[in-house]
Length: 497
Image 1 (tube, helix red, strand yellow):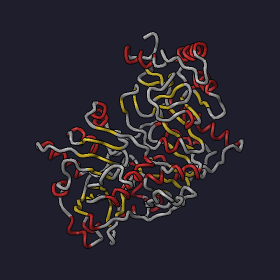
Image 2 (image 1 turned 90 degrees about the horizontal axis):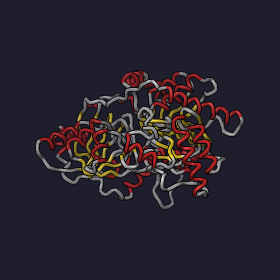
Image 3 (image 1 turned 45 degrees about the vertical axis):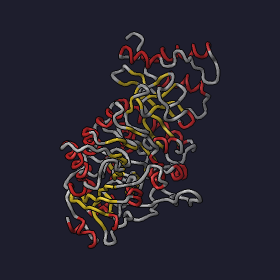
Image 4 (image 1 turned 180 degrees about the horizontal axis):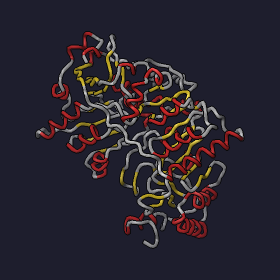
């Protein structure tokens, strides 16, 4: 593993986790690599060991996005996190945030790195980053995620590096570019999804490196399940609609696609494999999954750009075994580039993102259950929804075995307002809101997207709001959250519960 350190002056920085973790004390602002993958694992375990040994300390933890149980989970359980920012998806971290034991601030992912460079998050005391190697000049070759690591390394007073056993052949996969900051910033010169504009490594000042560790740990790989019937039906609606728009020349066939992680994303990508209409596709997204490898192998995808790869165990082995093929088709970038509103709008991305609930006028709640309980975070959904050429918000029509309707009179928390949403899709149907007035949106969302068990309830609410209050977007403020209140009281949104 020492051969991974090609910079001679850094070889004497190799140490153990206890020595490295000593640089992290009470009140440290700790910035870590990782964006669903590529997060450090040894130092977090050592911090947990110290806490369980009786040491009292708290850190402020900043990442690129979710990191998994081996970071967020164990640190939250040990009680050492004072604040977490931004997106996370760990159940233990979620529970402690909702119990107000950990402070949490959500952010649009495209904005994070610029905020750090501006000093708005405070001092970058320590950065811990995972890498596959260090170059002769002391620069970093990242793993399978980039996230915000280039900015964290640039701004950190101290840098700790965990070198993994992932192959050095990952060199060449990454395109590291830090844009200019205001004022008078120049454009980000990406004009096609596969354009490379930066370096294949992360610039690093070797003088800031205080510790290097060798890690045998692997990322917790995602276990992908087959999309259920609702996800497949949602995918069918989307693919049919886009095919229709392309045939009528209202949408160019060459626009790149973005989709979040999960069943619907996998169903849409799987649909590309089964439909000869879609070919020579580009993907410009945040996270790339196993299905992207399938599409590359089939010749359906020309290039896939993202900020990280989240693969199953089989997917990882397949990817590493055939890096020579995939390296020319995949580009991993900093998240401020993969999610850049400027680039998304220039490329004309077709974006698909998931909601917890959608109201009858098209406002979207992506983050909070029943308005109060944080689920994950807004992630990059706002970056793509507000700037994509065509944007879909998708959700199964119900949750909790039908006890919760995902279509409601008014969302209990607003992440995206009606002006950011083009098309709403559930397994029952699709509504293109772009040519519709708010009242027309409400009528079509109720009849096309809501589950049949809830259509009468929603239609009754809407009609009474129209006749009682009228207005541009009729609402009855006395009853607008009646469905939510009924669930909290009885365990179901249905009236007969």
